[in-house]
Image (cartoon, rainbow, N blue to C red; front, side, top):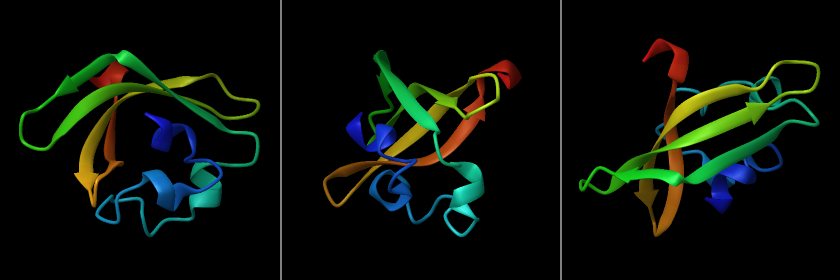
Length: 89
């Protein structure tokens, strides 16, 4: 999911406008040097126009965090709408 990997540089490219963090300080969510990776083998469609994929966020100076990324399709593009910490599932 290329749009997820672009999140730190261009959050609007991969973040749904309906995401709860869309109006947040995205510079704090994705500080400089942050990388986002998605594991394509974990993609699970929900058959409702979206799906779930494992996403790892690496922020400088912090331990990597792994999330279940909830994705929706908007205007032909996959967008992240929410995350759930995999440790909370």
